[in-house]
Amino acid sequence: MTGPSTAALTELEREIDLPGDGLDRLRLAPVPFVPEVRLHLAEDAIVWWARMEAAAGRTLPPPYWASAWAGGQALARHLLDHPELAAGRRVLDLAAGSGLVAIAAALAGAAQVVANDIDPYAVAAVTVNARANRVTVLARQGDLLDDAGTQADLLVAGDVLYDRELAGRVLPYLRRAADGGAQVLIGDPDRGHLSLDALELVASYPVPITEPSVDSPVRRVQVLRPR
Image (cartoon, rainbow, N blue to C red; front, top):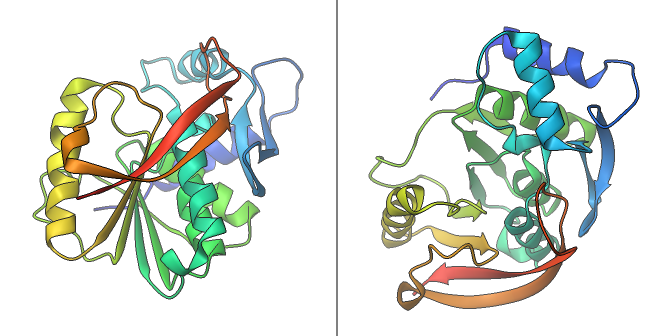
């Protein structure tokens, strides 16, 4: 795994500090369901994505890191309400996006927190957001899903089952991690790709929605673990 390039981090920080008004601006704001954490979020992630692509002059991956996704909000809330889950432990936040869950784990007293994502902009966003919350998070880029397992004591995965193909890779990886001794927690707003017979419910939360293109201001999110 490698960290974000200096260019990616510098570019993201420059974009965050851009002056201007309107919906295409990132703002540092408390997360609705986890107000203890502040993130740099887009008021409209679709507009922000278009702005990034126009500035870069090329196609870029969707900026999942610019929204506080429901599954991550639920997991972050759960860790802060139950800090013993993370305190003194090594935590891996898989497909971390903005780094919300990783930051919550650090605030809960984790000994080490690694936030992983395949998108270099997400890795840079984690670095910037961790700094804004005055916590230490190791942001690392790479695809872990073919790995045999993890060295973490606690593996958290928020909103990572948003399509069938991805779920087909994520769920076996989470099972391998659990079989290897890691505690695994999944935050999922019922996007239809769960294997419920292999998972058990830990908690359920009504989470305010900040993500784009939704038809309800609140979504019920489950926190689950492998059986």
